[in-house]
Image 1 (spheres, rainbow, N blue to C red):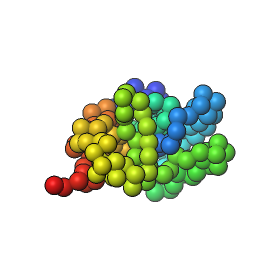
Image 2 (image 1 turned 60 degrees about the vertical axis):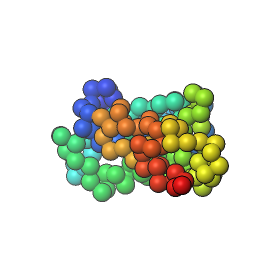
Image 3 (image 1 turned 135 degrees about the vertical axis):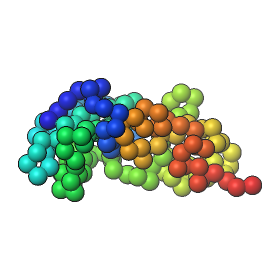
Length: 163
């Protein structure tokens, strides 16, 4: 059952899907339409799931699930993943690439492959205070507090050069 994103509690589980480049308005509209329909019918073992989504920076599609009513199961999570695979095919874009690092540079959201990001850190193009998007956050509360963080406060810190 689809709910407003802001209506979900902070302990709602989240999944963050990112695009390598900004999504044009038409793609945002199509993704939104697909997700509204999907989340309205999303269920686990016949029980409706209370879920929502938001799209941030025209690049991140974030799905949230209030597991207080009913928890996601392997099958329900698979259905969500299959939806995003279908969206990738239909819209000719990548939303499941976990090897892409997204960061802020001069206030703009950018992305690059993980290996190139590591190299940029080693070369001094970025530093420990560069803002990155920690897409491994697990809850809506973490999304609000620990999603946009300096490299030194994220899992990305393992890429920092050691002197």
